[in-house]
Image (cartoon, rainbow, N blue to C red; front, side):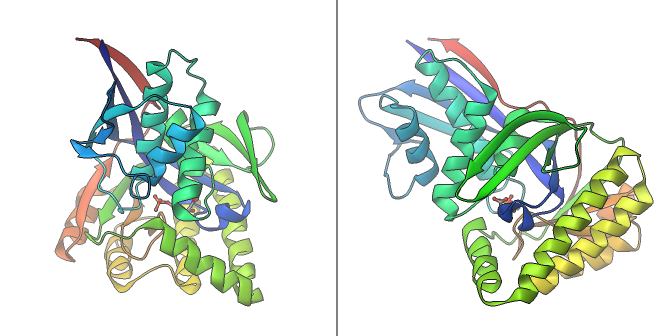
Length: 313
Ligand code: PMV
């Protein structure tokens, strides 16, 4: 008997959240906070000692179904707060997929793991992009529907959308994340945007502009243009606010960080969760965020994607 341990990193979205759900460009960087899954075969399927419930453990259920997986016992450990906008559910899904695949002796194909994690997110959120799943699985820097010339990783299609995912160099830039402490699940935020877009051309135009901003940001990242990227991040925050996915706590932290940054914005689905600032004065940004009641941390980028090990009992 052996246990399989797999872990995957969280991420933050530099530009393009929400619009990426509709196939627009976006870019994300994996960070040095990981989600770990430890699985073993068990006649009584459970999650951290509690019975496995299909309706509760939607992400896991999707992955179990896709892999005709035998009953397992799962223990989890996370350095990523859930609902913090840092991709904890994608990291969990990617790590769990890799762990059950290894348990069944199947090939550890990165694309297959990313698709498992994407389908799990889609089922749990009602709608999703493969951005978080790809960033957690591959690690480093990931661009979705970027300009030609990127290093392609994989393409994923669902309904009428196709997402071409590629790898990008991790920039030598310093980012500070500020967590509001407010847990904000992704599903309701994604649904809010879907409803707004369905009834308003204005919302669709804002999503287009977020995509255009991300495309410009990918160019700024490529040529290490910190000032340009910062300006685009702040602009993106305004667009996301107009879309209705920011909140007063996020705005407070973004405003406080901006004074010491090239730019700042909410990251992830919003409504709470976290913001991110691009700066060369991380200490001042951390102080400003903490003063306004946020939990700051300097993120280390360039984090490795999903990794698996086997522990013999
Ligand atoms: O809040 P997070 O970390 O789950 O990020 C969600 C990103 C969205 O673009 C809002 C949704 C998605 O699936 O891409």
